[in-house]
Length: 109
Image (cartoon, rainbow, N blue to C red; front, top):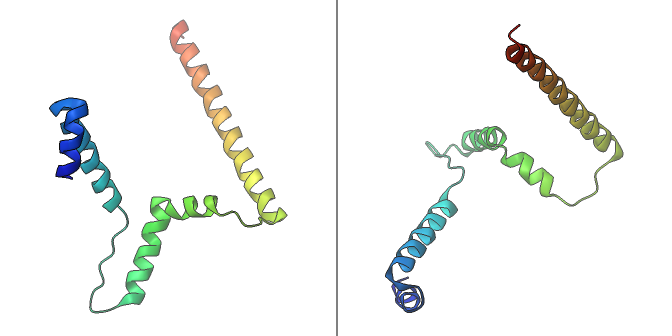
């Protein structure tokens, strides 16, 4: 790291290297983030269930499923399409209600 900083100081100056080294440190810290689970008394089964719960709550499981490139059954496609449509309709209804409330507030009703 120091050798890289010395070489880059020639091109960017000392301030550029400091900001670059801070970015590298932030990137390294970000790489270490993730789900951590402690195993107590060698109980791996419990640790796996805790990890699975944490993955579901953090949304990592959805990201992994979204990245899979295997075949999706037509029934699954229909279910996903229906859920997306319901989400879209709910969002539109919410926007319509919010717009009506704002119009009443602007008009002073």
